[in-house]
Image (cartoon, rainbow, N blue to C red; front, side, top):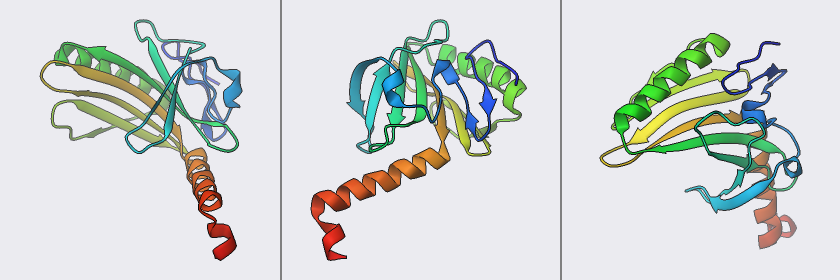
Amino acid sequence: MKKLVLAGLVISGLFAGDPFGVKLGDDFKNYKVIGKSETTSGETLYQIKAPKPVKNIKKYYTLVTPKTKKVYAVWAMKGYKDLGKCKKDVDNFKLILEKKYGKFKSLIAFMGTTYIHIDNNTTIVDKCDGGIGESVLYLQYTNKLLEEQADEETAEIKAEKNGWNDSL
């Protein structure tokens, strides 16, 4: 196994192992929660203390399967006042990540830069979303199998809550 000093990433089996010291597929209770919010789609987003943070990035979040409480995504985020600096950092991360994972694809973004890499069941997104005033850098790692499990668990919870299981 190779290690990437920047983010402490390890590829192990089907998972991008330990981005920022957070193991995808790990039990969520192994991480210290320091905040909680929601994504735009209503999923609970937990802000955590990253075991292996990247220098100058202070915010780390996880998405968790709702029943089994397994980490299926981990995000690092950093705000910028300068879109150019955000884009430059995203480009630098891309170069480092490509040495580890291979080529990233560039996606068209109106006021930012987005790169994506899909390998086995893990998606890695390196992007800068921005505009006039403020920009945000995102490094996002998502395990697609666990994301599907989260969707199934969410549907089960909704079915139980609404009594659908008894009717169908």
